[in-house]
Image 1 (tube, rainbow, N blue to C red):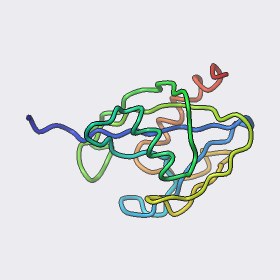
Image 2: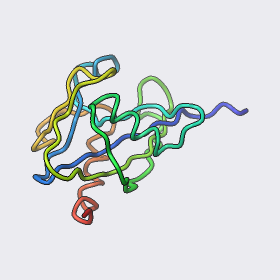
Image 3: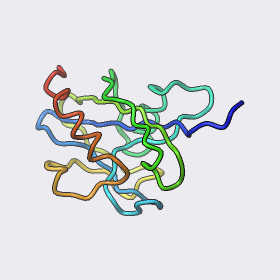
Length: 137
């Protein structure tokens, strides 16, 4: 097999009040900084399965239908190396309380993500998802 970029997924999770679920990274890079829940796709799973697994592992939340936001492939987006991320958007019905998981130091609803520094290119991903959020049921 050829040497290729790592494949990852990120998830924008919004609630009915328009808040975004963010995690604080437990490890470097960006230790302690807000990030979207997500991570690397494992061998044998789809990107969608990886997205749902990572959200469950990092924030203790089960998600359903995913809407594609975009593919983020800038070779400089991750200081660990060239990583391509497939980003999805989902809206959760009702109140959901996140529970911090394995790779996260915290998981919480954030009302205005623009007030915070975000890891990687997650600010761009969130900005790209804003128009799509209005189309979710």
